[in-house]
Length: 292
Image (cartoon, rainbow, N blue to C red; front, top):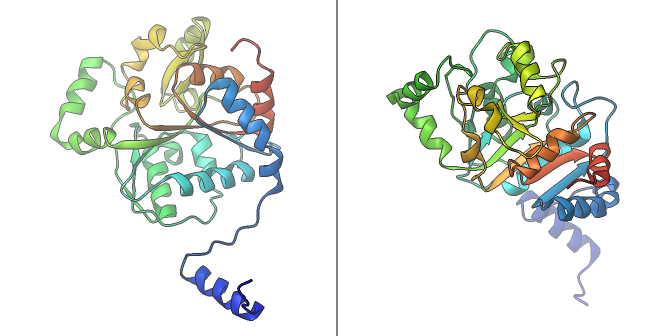
């Protein structure tokens, strides 16, 4: 026994908390309930980490899921370190996530938009805006990627990225150690790319016929994670190429709600993501999936 009085212990805890040595946290009972399910999904799909939150009443692309938001910011607070470069994509999932952030530790990191996207409509879903909001939350720095998302020809995109003014963002791509991304689904009703007018509906439908199941950073892939059949479009996208994205150490996919299963399976098989933050409904669908 240390023979220290309770008031002394209380003062020591209070002092430690004020100095950032002691952290007091109320544990969410769902974390304990989903722990075994998280390990099952990790083992089945070979993922480095899976975080499961209680399902909400709406799809994450339509509305804020506070459970997903809380778990995402807890995860990022844990894994982001000072001097890290953190890439972010675009879309409604990340936009909704940023509408309900939770307190986080300040990080001396840099958030990097890994996609272009400049127009007057729905600026809040664009990668530049997402990077700025993340930087504000973490009291961090951010860069901006001032470029259209879709170019008319691959050689025009190549020349554009070779311009001097683009070199800071291009070089930053090579420093990224964490990427946070939403996962697109093959639905015209919910696709950010369709709704924002970045792809014609007829071409989107044609890609679905070819087996497209989702997109990451506006680059389409099939159920095996292959992008080969969609290169005619993917090569027009001003974004970190998906092959480079796969080389990033921590690739965080955030997806929750209905109709996400095929998109998630393709992203996992293609090694596009190695960390998954999802809801309990999607996690149960993954565990019930028999073809992996």
